[in-house]
Image 1: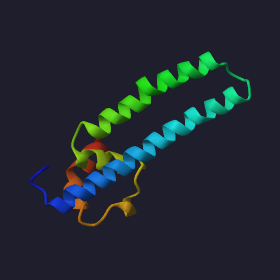
Image 2: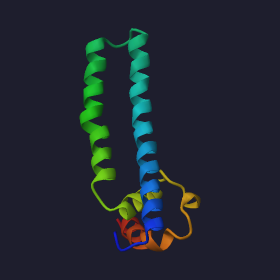
Image 3: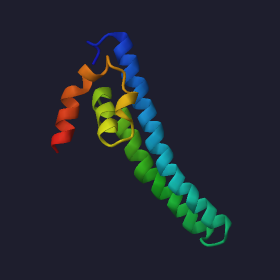
Length: 108
């Protein structure tokens, strides 16, 4: 990854961070709905606490590991394939750097 120009590394990093933010926000919105259920008295505090714990040890942790533990090119390609990032959000100069990852992910 360090063989890429600094401006490419920065763009990939920024795109990866945006994808992480979007996926985390989606997961948190599901958890927010549980807070609403708790406020309305439909679930108890213990149930909500358990759901928070599950979120922290499940989706939150998995997203953190995925977006902070690997190649930025793969994370960006994954985000595009999964629809987290739209193709038109990817700058032209980034496409050549994620083509192989995109092909790999689309074959699975």
